Amino acid sequence: MPEGKPCCTPPRDHSDPNTKKSCLLRSPDAGSDKGMTMVKKGMFSMGAEGPECWSGDGEGPVHQVSLEDYFIDQTSVTNESFSTFVDATGYQSEAERFGWSFVFHNQIPKAHFKRLSFDRAFGVEWWAKVEGASWKKPGGPGTNIRKIMNHPVVHISWHDAEAFCHWAGKRLPTEAEWECAARSGKEGSTYPWGDELSPGGKHRCNIWQGQFPKKDLGADGYRGTAPARSFPANDFGLYNMMGNTWDWVADWFDPHYYTQSPLRDPGGPVSGTEKVIRGGSFLCHESYCNRYRNSARSKVSPDSTTCHLGFRCALSPAGEGAESLS
Image (cartoon, rainbow, N blue to C red; front, side):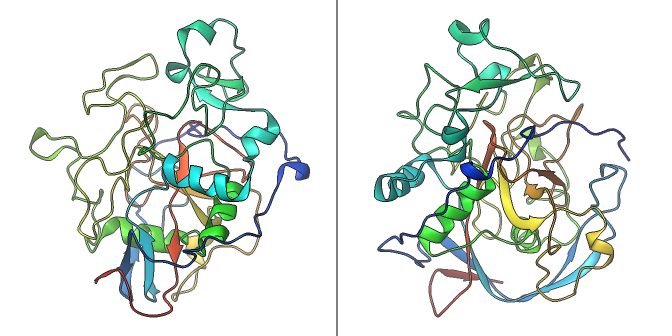
């Protein structure tokens, strides 16, 4: 079992209640299951206990979970979808209200690189607090999203994701729903497609290749985010459940929760200070953070925002719709 506490997603130093902002408006299409897949009710084995699990993450014990029907987005929410939300509501993201967000060093334009102060609070030197970085400017000043509207939106806090979900008439998936969807019926598998990271030598997700954190070879085709529908979908028709960008889920984090979680529709601890994130990102590498696995979990404060953190939505069914899979 790996030791230590690798900084997959740096947290903000403190929370400011003035940056939290709800959205009371609703989309005309609120509650629509378009672009979602129904996961039929059933039971699955959640968690892992192998040597690949990080101590302190609480990936085990493996336990049975029973879930009711639910819908989940086939892709992470994209820049295009988030732009539609902002245009309709005037919503300002938490990164915009704070005035800065965390950006990984290789995502920052070279023209701005030397003027930045890198944060060393986590024992690493590859994250920078970049003034002006937000979902609109993912690399900070000098960057924009005009040519990546089909990529996952990033620099999104848990509160931002909740606001979008409310507008869309949806919600964030629970951690159990997320893992069940990622496994797509493959009990005990390491990845959504099986146990081999690159079957037949083919890349199945957007993660770091090369020497971390200095050189990303981009052998999978990307050195940053990839389009939301990149790589083959899993057996439930879901894209990029591993790598690309982390997904926020609804649950508070507790490393001991699996020892006491209920069998039916677990919703996580009743309170906490950090929210669970799932799936890993384009910055994950086996030498530092191998959390691009079905059972892997990490956590960060709900107001935190980075260049590799996004979300996808879930929906409790009110009737018929979307493609149904069991």
